[in-house]
Image 1: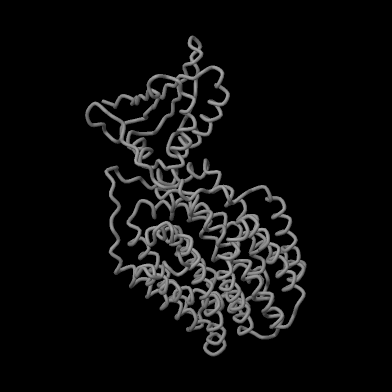
Image 2: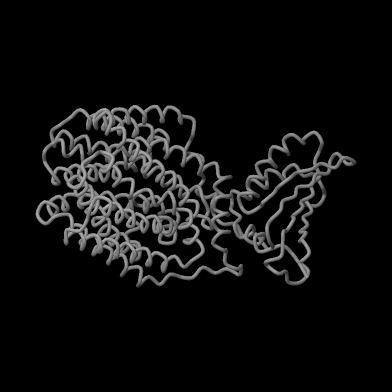
Amino acid sequence: MTSAWDPLKRPLFRALWIATVVSNIGTWMHEVGAGWLMVTLDARPIMVSLVQAATALPIFFLALPAGALADILDRRRYLLATQLWMLTAAAALGLLTLAGLVNAWLLLGFTFALGIGAAMMTPAWAATLPELVPRPELQPAITLNSIGINLSRAIGPAIAGVIVTAAGPGAAFVLNALSFLGVIVVLARWQRAPSASTLPAERFVGAMRAGLRYVGQARELQAVMLRALAFFVFATALWALLPLTAQRTGGGAAAYGTLLACLGAGAVAGAFALPWLRAHITRDQLVRGATVVFAAAMVASALLDGIWPLGAAMVAAGTAWMATLSSFHVAAQTAVPAWVRARALAIYLVSFAAGTAGGAALWGAVAGRVGVPAALIAAAAGALIAAAATWRVSLESADPAGSDRLEWPDPPTHGAVDPERGPVMVNVEYRIDPRNVQEFTAAMNELARVRRRDGASSWGLFGDAADPGRYIEFFLVDSWAEHLRQHDRATVADREVSERARRYHVGAEPPRVSHLIAPGRE
């Protein structure tokens, strides 16, 4: 039986996990420093909430390009570049702040720059995790990553509260810059094995198009995205308005750091409770229950004033946040195959960013009109309504084993074929008992989703007017290389869908497949 701690026995995962915890401590120190600095520069609710929006907004715009780059470039070097970018941005902000040269808009600009680095890094980081541990350890590894994030959330704000009070936000920003060094060292020493492929590398625009096409046909991932958006657009109100909630206590930056630390402590406690919860309730039940707890914590943060009652509410909110976030991440990871993982997870992260960035700006504007307590209560009500509205959207449909790669041999050809030739039309001829046409058509429509998801630009199914039992499936692919990629992208789940359709074939021989390529230009 796989232990929750087994991934830490693997040296590379352990080194990256420790370095990432240190880096995330620095990130949360920046969070406290930026949030509190904005309160001192411009305390209007909309400006305070824009700090959260500036952090999340880059993911909305850059996640898909970042995912495409992560799938077609060397992932180790790509991650190194993102870490160096964030180190530079954090160091520049720290030095300017120490020099007294930062205003509200410059703070938002540098926070946005750090958000760009995080947006470019996150899809690659998420897609790298299955390279570091075997599949049986993937769930514990994701949970350990969440523990690390929330452990840093508990430690970083507490340290930042002391540092910001004693030395100012600039010192917190400089320490954030230094926190990236550990990850850079580990990545620089990682001897990552190159991925072997005889196919030409995907082009950037084509890789993005393939990612969008895949997600457009991936119902399991769409379900995760919808549920995530329905939760985050309301739940982010607690994070966005937390500096103003802390200000209400009169405790200053230390109070803000304490409340963030309580959120992190609750999330760590939630991570330890998750294995037991998952053994007794479904993922859908877990997310629904956690949404109720988080909504209750938002109401409590609107009505309570003392630092300790608010801290207790934050512990409950952190536990609920951990349960929902981990559930969404695991569902997304297991819903997609390796070839498109970074791109698909990037698009999933767009739903996260849309919820957090849009929600932060929305609830900041609402708080500016009706006050922080009323905005938090309205957000809590919205979270409960959204949970009820998405009740039938399940997170349980993803099959982890279904995303395993299937060995599908390349199609036979007469001589070498130029990979750039195309388009390619693939025909598959079936013999069907007329009594089974309705069931066959339903199975083929499901197969059509697989064909389009893995690269087909067009698909159709036609019956022969002169022969009621003869049916031709066709699909078009842009080039011969793209069709070979279809073979390379096939998964166990794809084979199961294909076999359900072929079950209705009654011919003595298997369905006849032909590959037709458009003539090349002279």
